[in-house]
Amino acid sequence: MNGASAGTASALLGWRQRSKETRREGPGEPSSWQSWVVDPADRLYYIWLQLMVPPVVYNWVVIILRTCFPSIATRYLAMWLTLDYACDLMYAVDMIVALRSGYLEQGILIRDPVRLKSRYLSSRRFFRDLASLLPTDLFYLVLGARAAAVRINRLLRTPRLNEALDRMETRTSYPNTFRISKLMIYIFVLIHWNACLYFALSDYIGFGSDGWVYPNISRPEFASTRRQYFYCFWFSAQIFTTVGDTPLPGREEAFLFMIADLLIAVLVFASIVGNVGNVITSLRDRDNVFFPNHELVKNYLRGHHICKELRQRIDNWTEIAVSVHLPTLSKVTIFKSCEKSLLEELVLKLTPQVFSPGEYVCRKGDVGHEMYIIKEGKLAVVADDGVTEFAVLTAGNFFGEISILNIKGNKSGNRRTANIRSVGYSDLFGLSKEDLTDVLSEYPAAKRHLEEKGRQILTKMGMLDDGGATEGAGAQQVETKIGALESALEALQTKLARLMAEAESSNRKSEARVALLESGLAARRGRPAGVGGARPASEEPRGMADAANRREKAESGEGRDGGELGEGQSGDEGQDRLENQRTDWETDQTV
Image (cartoon, rainbow, N blue to C red; front, side, top):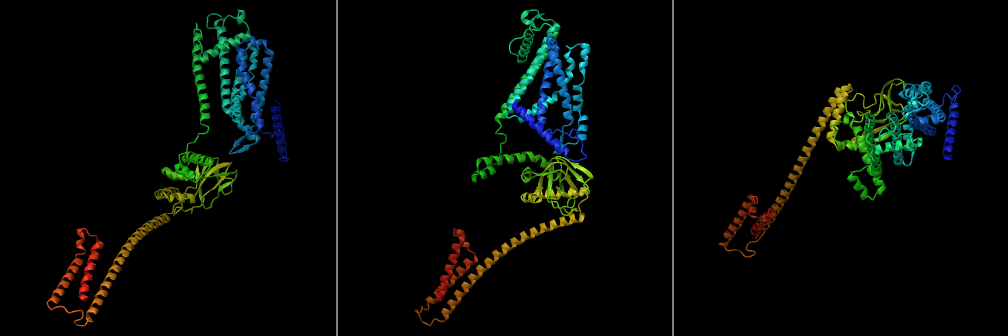
């Protein structure tokens, strides 16, 4: 209690401080009460939701109890009426709080009382709240104070209970336990209603008329009000849980009641199993939500001895980025029908950007360096005066995709053609021209495809200069021809280098041969007669004949271009053989 009182006191102090700040806004501002607005994210609003839980639960439990158990309604009538009107007062105050509750629009808290009033009065919530406060208690004058069913319209305030429970679930440190507890409360209320209806049906059929209905209340052991309620609650729980045998009904009304209960029991059982299964699944998969499959990144991080925590964060981020933003990027006109690998690389190049209310994303005439995809928020296309709005872009829209392609012939010259301003807080993703160029360098076919789609879009918009487009196409053809000529030139240079190497080799061989012949001829001319022993006249012709034959063989072998190589000798061996033959012949000639 002390903690709750302290929290309430701090919330009230915060409200008083905000009221003072609002009062100081200007001399022409209305009083603090007229400008008082509740922030839905404030603690005061959360405390008020908690205060609204008991009135709603009270009506759900007590109205049916007083309707089906007349003794309870009459015995504590004064207490019931006091609690009834206390809950009605809480309902009325809740309508005032709802009338002054602000709401977020593009991330901005709307505090204008006129707008808040108009929004609440035109909503279905107002009509539901108003219907829950209709003075149906006036029927007490006709039906009597026992007819608590006339207050059944108070159950229309149930959405307020659901809102309070959802807020409590998000703030608690044990959401799974709270979810199970909330389910058990729902089941308790359902069994409570069924027990009350069972007692009313037994009263209608007749207490003790058969074994199915409630026993005769004239018996002392079944006359107590407490015994009546506990017996009916036990009987209803037995039906819903299908535990134990229930007596066979004896009337058609009882059969219909049992059929409805059994059908509801099936739904209750399915709800319990489903909720418990969700809780168990969330506990089991709490740490295994993502399963990255980027083996290259994993191997890189593992090879560089990156810590395990950082590796896990990188894997999770990569998987999330691809799975979340890939469908959004696929909606962009120029990126439709592109291969998935290209889109995955572009997704990793997206940079998140946040724009505050009134901030310009781009202005008319600025050079476009990146395109934008709206993740959340609203952007307005405004005129130069900043007031006139031509269009509003919402989540999922994109703009600036043509400027990053740098298409020749674009009449706008890759400049922005409109002023785009953020209405509220907007979350955008940007893709720069440099990042797109780096990615497209590895996908030349995709680059040509994107440029072609960009030209088609500019043509439909009337923003493509035909001369520029033709010039761009001619320039592309010239570049293609230049590339072909360069390839042919490289091939010719290779052939020329080979021929020059062959000519140089032949020239060296010829020079060596001529030098050898000249040295042999000079030695032969300068030799004196009879030196070294003259040969007989009969042997000189034979020696000359043998040398001539060897020379002819050498020349014939050289003319055949190494024909003897076909007998298993390599080209180098055949060349050496020919050189040896020439050397022998030249030696003979010299001698």
